[in-house]
Image 1 (cartoon, rainbow, N blue to C red):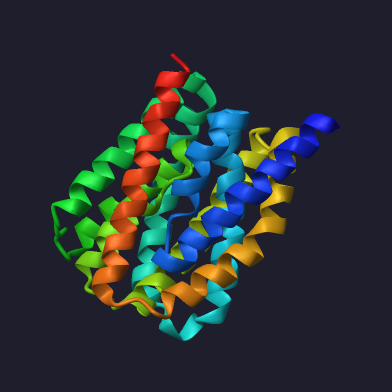
Image 2: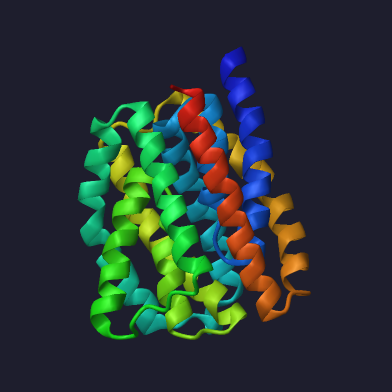
Length: 245
């Protein structure tokens, strides 16, 4: 019981920071939560807990800005994501902790490199579907489906508020399917539920603070925060790989 209370306490702090990051950048809850939470409970538990909390955060945000969502784009990315989830789930359930943590770190570094170099994806349907499938695979393997979705929405040229709202809708849709898959494969055990409980407590304060910051951002500041957050979490994830060596 004491161990579960400690996990819940860690969850409060980690997911408060994660909710703040998502409110500011439109994504980032899992990018912050997975590498930090993995230090305490291991990567597979961190992935599942972060996916559940990300879905909760996204549902709250989507409900507040429904008129800003680009529905056709959100629908395509969500459906495409479901197609990639089985492969990611296989990685999550078969890979050892070190391998899974390395996958997390590499995914982050690739995302940072692509976004920092201002790579612009093609805007056609094939590109959108490819981004969606990749995001679904990453979601069930690492809990971090944000990078390919961010690149896809940036290519669409969405302004910050529409960008954030559309991203929340996709996160919510993909997250609901992923959480169902986790439940069916026995991933929702006591430690995971303790971390989730902590996240439910911490996320309202994190989102409230982050939303105030978001309202004061220019588009360029918005981009800088997204990239800086990715760099920090990539470093944390890599550090976790070496700590576990």
